[in-house]
Length: 266
Ligand code: 13P
Image (cartoon, rainbow, N blue to C red; front, side):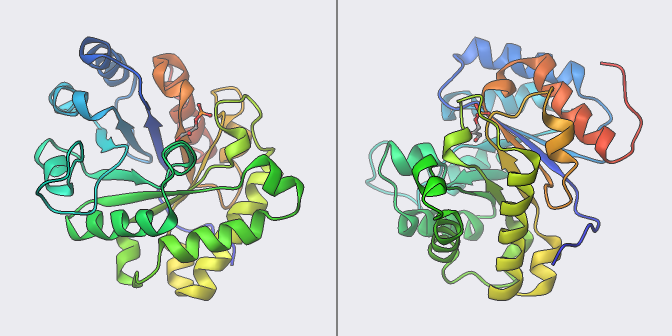
């Protein structure tokens, strides 16, 4: 399966644990100024929880959407420190990242937990960006596809074809995150094609054809055109470069260029 269809690319900015309230507002203002009239590409910014409401207000009237970095699977109650889908929606969040490798590896989150979070997010009216990806050791030992298969299988357990209207997959090789060691365009394409074929065989060809698969891992404005130009790469999930307004806007512009749209002056 290798459909270049009408999938609308999605560029996400994962701000991770960066920005105080004022820094977040300043960053949102800077992005809003640089990113106008972007109808061919969806752009989502994912600030820390503490800055969601302020960024939502700052982005009002812009083409930028609000996302969050995590969600808990219960609806409410005695879960100290956790944040529900309803809470996220109440501050304007439409999309939430689940299964980011930093949560899997630093916080010990299992694919079972990721599955429960994804389910709760969808049931709570959110769209998810499900992040998957192999470590450097796993790639070196030829385990990439085994790891992707297992992460996808466990994280999407119980999902239906209909659910995929609200699912984005982000392929984020762990060895490429925050390291400057971007996957080559070919490495990205091979992994994305594997994920797309997997969606086709485990769910439906229609799911494979329509699901947006983002690449994440040291994406910059300099390498974006080549990566985003791959047939199965439908956007990017950007960490470090999403904190730099010109860089992030440059990545969105690269996506527009790849689509053949007008290259806007920044
Ligand atoms: P970097 O772009 O900093 O490598 O981070 C990628 C990422 O983890 C996005 O979720």
